[in-house]
Image (cartoon, rainbow over all chains, first blue to last red; front, side, top):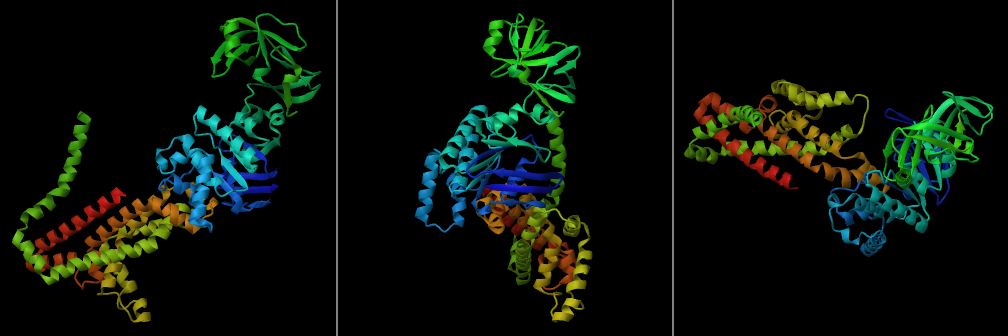
Length: 336
Length: 250
């Protein structure tokens, strides 16, 4: 178990404030937050490269930690084999032992054919694999991953995510992975912590964190497109003449968040148990890779994500009159 | 195209300004005069002393300047700007003033001389010190820029892979900054060779080539000074072109 107890750190113009985390042995733990939240700083503290100004880190020997930075940080003056074997220079091993380890890890990561290449000639995905091999060859107990897929294109990112999941299943080491990509956090993390402006805002199991964002900032970051503020009376929040039913009976002031993929769009009003159903006009349509975002003006603007197939079948166009429907339980209420 | 032509013309004027006196000097030097000068023990000795003392100064600066350059590139601390200003100072002060300052510290009547009964005045060590003083900014600043260009995360990575801070420096930062350090060293060495003002005040004797050129010009005129100047220039040019080619190839 790794424990950060009330860790604070001032570094240049940035502050980490009172960070407390418990990371179980063998866990895949994600630290999720926007750029500039202090994610890399936490990893550098865990790696022992920096010392906390206050608080303490328990249960971690820096000799058993490996850190992989976002840009891989391969040594440009060494070739692939020399990069992977770099850490073995500082261990008492015979040449045969070193070579055996090197071949084994290269086979594991399917980079045997790259061993004599210069690192500057590798693709992003290949560099990532070399960086992983260089870390894993030392058999660290804890692997620290700093935005490992941020510099990769979509296809390579998927492959590397699958690789991390496979390696974690196989070696069962503690993986501490920082990212700003909540889909990646959802796909890989067993538990996650949300870091904003140097503070841990929320932690827990990924689905829990996504279902119950702690505040408006988190909701915005997690991709909630429909966030509204107001006063809840008798389970209802009034907005521009619109009454949205909420799961909360009464709150002096609250933020509401409705996930755009939990709203149904239809040509006619549908009979259902959902309490929230409104008529409106399509204001804008934005096609994305796997979804189409339809913005409907119902008095307030509601973003609705539908599949490209539904979009085509319904033949939606800007200016069309439509109905939007969502359950009361799809409405998250926070900060009240 | 007109833009490039104008810039090309302006650049050409500057190149011409540098090249013209040098070409004129080569043009004025007659072959047999050059051979005669090269055969003189005094000339040979002055040229080799100049090359050698500047080399010692450069090696000393490499040994002391690389750690300083590394710290200046990596750390922020109070007084850093003052240190950087001090390092740059020899470039901006008149070198005769630098010579006098050096004389006060290392000369015959200095505290150093009284404490050790040694003096740097009039010795090869004194020439080396004068060259070191005036030309070390080239090496320290070159090395500092080199280290600054090495991402600190490369060192961090080395350390998480088991390297001590010194091992990370030795195996990662130093090789990656090597080109800048060597370029700085070549510039320093070249600048040391050309030094006159500080050397002439701290150690007039033994004669370095620039001092010999000055002395011959004063006592015997242009015809006597030119062959020595041409020889020094030719040798320096050859060595610098060779070293630059070696550094570029790496």
